[in-house]
Length: 291
Image (tube, rainbow, N blue to C red; front, side, top):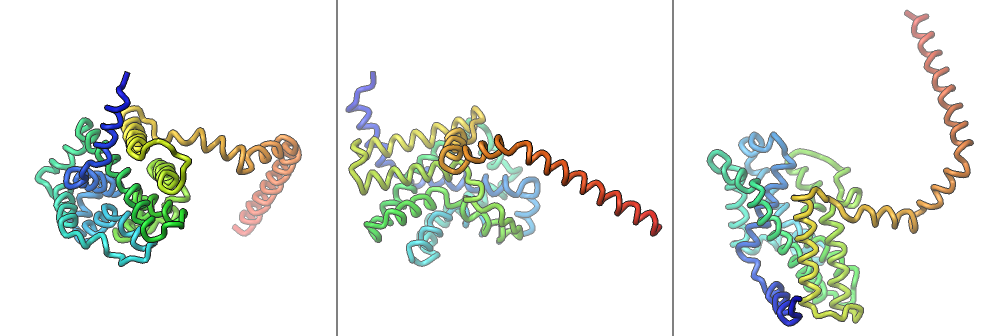
């Protein structure tokens, strides 16, 4: 049995973890990996031919949460760049990931044991960013729960929401990559975490100590990230989403409509198919006649 006092003491230590510099390095490494994987096989040629665009797109991913939070809270957009040490650290990691001799840094970061450690540290960093986003917004808009929630969300997974602009810097326009069209698991996890932190800060619904709530979210982030890397479980929310869509977003009624009107739909589909085939035959005959 785990001693409750020892567990609470561990949770308090986790909440007091300093992110600088080790967790910041892990975050920068994972952001660079995301950029390189998005570039695919052309990552090395692109970094050689367009180093400025490569650096800028990587910085946009690394500081995405800060950019978006500043935009939403009415602060200067370049606020994340005011920390010169953070920018220099991010630039150093970017340079090592793209320009190290024989690509050794990238290969080392892709080595599974190393990647597991870096990914786990990144998830601890993500939880910290979500909490910091909620706390910072609460100082400016103490009664605006939606602003607290949005700020925590974008701070936790800003890279997903800025992907369109980041790709545009690299000369690629993909409007369908908007995160809310096909939300990734980090976005869904940050939604849950941001809601919990808002409820913990502004309501009495959560009676547990803040340290336990924070530690629970850290475990949630780390567990499912490691499950994705080791077990291939990429989105555990899908079963709940399917159930929610079926119950609350018209899934049941659509199924009933298909069951009741299935024959009519089949007949109309068959008629449309016959008409389409006749049209195609007519066009073929006319084409042959012209030839």
